[in-house]
Image (cartoon, rainbow, N blue to C red; front, side):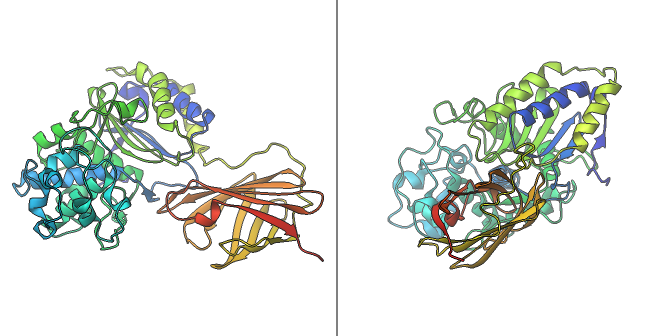
Length: 486
């Protein structure tokens, strides 16, 4: 199998898309400030663009969040095709150990199909409402709010329960089961894995760590009706199930938070406008499929701090690329081809850029500030800088903290206390203010900001803000700082 996992590379024009359209799309995403990590496009099973924003590379595993749900759907579809799951059967029938007297009759009625289509009896994830390490048990024990099979509500605990069902019947973890069925055969990364819940079950609603290329491989199986598109063209997922999975099963107009989320929901797949569908995860993780054009676009990103990011991405796509699809080859535009190649080469996660500032932060750098009493025990704040790179240091209950950052560049490391990979940059707004932005790029995705400011009396503030999904509680606070006496 080739380095592209069976995808032949092609210039966009040979697949009916002008290179200038891809270039304009990339530039518009950049101008909109959308923090993209990777962008891949395919048409007619050919790879027409593959770009990674430094420090991300092809082999970098990325947290895919709710894209995981579509993999759970594939597992259900395979087992249904084997006759081992009946999606019209009540899900609790497969979990008799949880069929306790306190289980509500409406929960007992919920069928596998209801969970697949996000029409479970719950309005929100059960394991976020019940303090129990057994996430599956919490699904069955939570008091329902509606009749199953009615009204879409995005319930990640439903996906988690379906994943547990796949693992219970197959006797394997979700990823291992799918590897044996077809993922290994299509070149899915051997290093990909899924995070686990407290009892060791796969986090079926959000746990996948994989390459963007892996998501493209997976999406092409669904685009091909559940059949492999290269090598052994065998049917790996029941075709009727695949057709149902990517078709509208639930209306999402009320619950959808943006235009594309209001197009409907299938079986752990979202419908989109233009007769499309997508695997879709929080923070800008997409595998967007347009069957009418034999087109797939995969994006990984961190858009957690941009509330309208999904609309912006799709608006740019439907403006810059969609109107220019052609069913025939078009002439190659060498100038546009060069522009696109140069844009691809320059892709990177953007660093903080305050322009041509001559500030050195003389009222902050090298001084020791006492942090007033706080619940996290943070104290002894220091900032160092050599004009090219800097450090924020302090102590806390968890130990010493040291975060390195670059000026006019990102530099990376392991985030203190949490151990996640990060990149960070910073800059001086004045001699009294420094701002640092840290991107978490690991099993968690998000940003952590530090704003340090002092006045003429050497009093000031350490303002922190985070958009990371879990943890990082000490970086959601405001701390008073005072320069220590020399």
